[in-house]
Every structure is written in structure tokens, then in C-alpha cells.
Length: 375
Image (cartoon, rainbow, N blue to C red; front, side):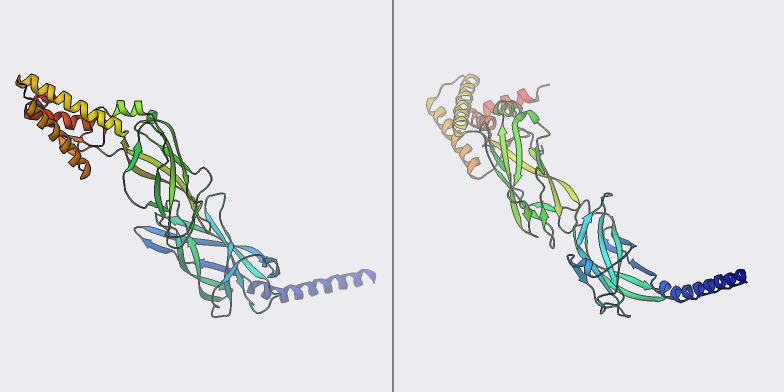
């Protein structure tokens, strides 16, 4: 009798369990939620996708210290919110963000469904904000939705040179020239990490005893400029040895490579950019004057030896003409090109060559041309 009673009790408990499960199952099924986003094309072959996966439920009270930005309600009254405090780069160097779904936004005790979303970006583009259309599926209900999210590229040109002016470097003395850079992003701030700037001279590393750079400010608002303060210590002897001969007229300008690390706000990646800054070495005025005088003396001497004539009036005229020509080139910022070589009036050797050729006249110029062209 006891055995039969136990069997009945066990059978009843099992039936009761099935009834409870049957009652719960529809509720569980109703909470099956997916969140999918449509890929966004940015042109030039660039595309941004966001993928998401469910990450459980949380209470609204647990998100009091978070920055939730809700979207408009969907057709069935659901609300999709973006947690702006969750923007970051994960260990896989992907931009990630937390998104929450409220099925009952008017019920503060109702749970929020959390989704972990990550960006899959292809191509090169500037960091900024974009609106992503998507579909929120709750069981059989499919509601269109849209959220505004930042987009980030590991190749974003966060910074640009404000101008392409040639940087004047004083030879043989320490200097702190500045380079102006601009935040190229229209909607996001850019920050600089500590020691995030390096300066290199790849053509002549030995021409410098020190090359350093520091930003004028560590945080730059959108579309604004700041300076990179350069601490440069040129080695005058090395620079003079490398610049004894004037460069060819088609030679590339002398440049410093400034590598800058920067990060856009709202979870941007650490971006490395190389900015090429043209520079020009400026010798001290007394050395320029000495070079000019030596050029005149050598030019007149060569003229006298070639022509075998000593005409002091003619020598004086040629000397004055040499200084006038050099001065005109300096004032007009022009560069004389002689035999395919640029003669910059502000360069030490080139200044002397200008006065030498002018003071020497056509006789000296022709002899120099013959010497250069001779195999």
C-alpha cells in the first residue's frame, strides 16, 4: 500500500513539474532576442560592420553610473540604448561597445538585455560618428531600429600639417622651432600619449646630437590646431660636410620625419602617423658674409688669371654686381640654378658660389662649366 502511494505521489510530482515547465516555456521563448546591424558603406571601398552577441540581463539600478543613450521606441515599444561609457578597444584591438535592450521601458524593475557589440572596419577612413540601421528580433517580432555609434579606423589620419612651410634651422646652435598640426577629425577630440612623438632624420642621423618633439597640448578639440615643439641640436660640422656641393635642381627637399601617436576619443585606436616637414639649414650671418667675400675674391682672382688683365675698376664693378645679385636673390626668395644645381642664397656654400660666378664673369663661368662637363 505504501509502495502504491509512493508511486502515485511521484507520478503526481512529475505531472506537476511538466505543467510548470509548460507554463514557463512560452515565457522563456518570448525572451529570445537578437540584434543585427546593416553594413555601412563609406565609399572608396571602405565599409564598417557591427556584430553583436547576447551577454545576459542586468537591472536598471546596476546601470546608474553608466551613460545610456536611448534610441526612439520601436514599433512594439522596445528601446535600444547605447552605453557611451563602454567605448573601448579590446584585447584584439577591436572597437567594442555595450548595447542594452528594454522590452518594458516603463517598468523600472524589468531587466535589460545586454549585447556586446564590436566593429569590423575595412579600408581607410576618418574616425567620426555614423548612424547604423538594424533589426531587433524578439521572438517573432522584428522591429527596425537605428543607433548612432562612433566609427574608428586603425589608419585614420587624425592629424594634418597646418601648412607646408619650410622650417628654418640655425646651424651650430640649439633651437626650439615649432610645427603646427591640426586635428583633422570634425566630430571627435584627439589626445596624445606621453612620449608619443619621435623625430628622425633618415638621410643624415649623424647631423644631429638631439632630436625631440613634444605637443603643445595633450588634448585637441575637433578641427583645431596646436604646435609640436621641436628640441633640435644640429651638428654644424656634419651638416656642412654633407652640403658642400649644392643639390641638383630636381632634388627632393631636405625633410625631418615626425612620427606622432594619437588616439581619437570614444574608443579610438592608437594611430601612428608620419609627418614629413621640409627644413632648411640657416648659417649664422657672419659666416654668410665671410662666404660672400671669399666668393668675390676667388671669382675676381680667377677672372684676372684667365683674362691676364688687371682692371681695378672692372673688378670693383663685378664685386658690387655680385653682392647686388645675391641680395636680389635673397629678397625675392629665389634660387639660382647654375648648370643644373640649385644655389640657395641663404646656404653657406651656395652664397659663396653665387658671388664667385658673378664676380668672375663669363670667362670664369665657362671655365667652371668645362671643368664640370669634362669626363
